[in-house]
Image (cartoon, rainbow, N blue to C red; front, side, top):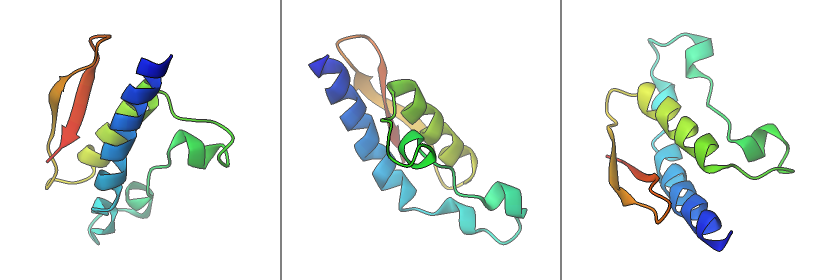
Length: 87
């Protein structure tokens, strides 16, 4: 359980850094595509915590919204899950 929490925390810290880039402010995008993606915690009014899959999905949506971002990995967890990093 602790390993899973550590993995989630590592990925969440990456998401925080990614979220500060604000790729959703490009004026050529439609209002719908400019909508800032929400984390599981934000969607549940902070009653739930994001899982690894939730975090990876969030990061993928953020990266897809900006041509300036690139998603790669910087290693793997003990469980064999990729640790995403956004450049």
